[in-house]
Length: 419
Ligand SMILES: [Zn+2]
Image (cartoon, rainbow, N blue to C red; front, top):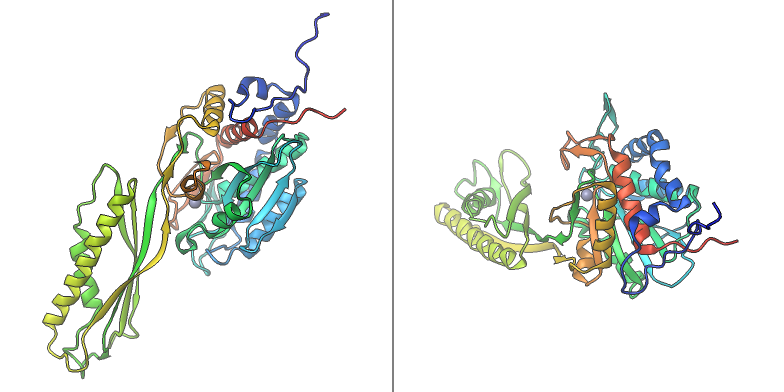
């Protein structure tokens, strides 16, 4: 054949504000094809890394050891890696062109306290361990994506940042991703958060949430000698029973949880204090405000009822307050975003039908700042997130990683090959 085919390493500039390059054309580039094939060729290695990462305890605020492991993996993938003040690990794959950055992030932390047995058991193909999917799958995916791009010698047009961030769960209040948004302010094109398993969901809408601590305090005393003194635990019970029948709307989906109760010193002491940690979420922030009002009313009523039932107020009554533990902003991805077009292109190419799933993830922060962001699973399947029975099955992981690779490269663009 005399006719020259399309040059093999043609540049595919996404063009500012323009459409991302067609995914089939992108996937046909030799370097990209080689990165796509890498996932299947290294399936066992990826699973091994996932098990190793998951077995390093990383409760929120204690991510340092796991961060070191991710730092090494990203360095092995040829990235320039540094740790920022928040404790995030940031690996940079330098772009050839403009100063903009495309961020790929996976959170390091888990909801499981120190002391939880996190060693990984195997049951056939399944891996069993707290945190194995959320976010062992996301972190292994992050390392795999960086390694595949390195092995295939891909140089993007825009810089890609591989971020393993702290403080996504619980009281971390998204501290890690907030810090990243701050340090790269003005340069961030988009954020893709890898959270958990699966390849067919996409989070385009960030759930707003508010986490609160209800604190009720009283004089306390001896269970026998001081009987009749108002009891904060009973007051909390009365308040929670009232609030538990709150009618949260199904649409917009709105939920509440009483997740942790602490307080009291011993079985035969009337407690001085009880604390209840609550998580309120909704697709609509206005519903959260309504729930908070109802919660306040329930606590006020529960405390009042306990005081009315008490026989002895001579040592003092009950006091209560509600403290905010963190607020997650909401937001949603505009229909005409370049990132969404890129994801759709990747899904169409791979035959994936994306189902939207609103969630609360690292994507909340960029979305609330008007920066394009999505959250995706890192492939495979999993279940039992945030429980001790959490599991992960790597079957189909390859598809999920290909989906992420194509989406990210469609947005970052690929630099023309150097001669
Ligand atoms: Zn997660």
